[in-house]
Amino acid sequence: MNRILMLAAATFLVATLSGCGNSDVQLTTQSTTSDSYVFAAGKSVITFSAYSSRTLSVPISAIDLFVTLPQGMSVATVSGASGSIDPAAMTAGSVLAGTNLAFGTYSASTRKVRLSMATTSRSYRSGEFLRLTCDVTATPVITLGDLRALNFPVVQVTKAVGYDPSTLSTVVLTDSIKITIDAAQ
Image (tube, rainbow, N blue to C red; front, side):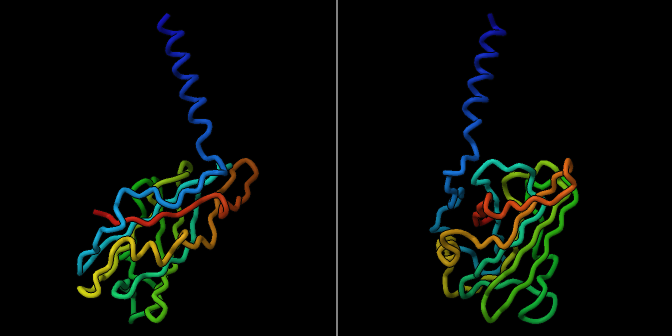
């Protein structure tokens, strides 16, 4: 009798979860932090997470995106106000396993950041993939809502890809994922 109940429960769980990743889902905010969160002056960390808006045929292996920072927020670069982001200012996200690369560029004049992530993980499909440490001035006060408003409705994903080992080919996933911005606390 217990086996029948467990089988019924497992069937129910699989049936319930089979709807996850539906193409009708519009995930613009999967955040745990309120828009009213205020970035402290000094160093603050922004997190980027990917969520699939439909079932992914392969795991995500790379994401390239643009984000605009509000006035008073900047990123440390290797040389000067613009250029390659200092490697110490970027780290791979908390859900990535394996070898991961995080890199990008920053333009002080436009406050645009181009971020890229690549991973050897064969299981990454969603969650936090990148952390960016920003320099924040005392004024103006910058909220998470300000950052999200500049990048509304979603962060601009330039390209997202996965690797299909059965066909030995790259699969474009750009239209299948959404990116959310949060603040590390």
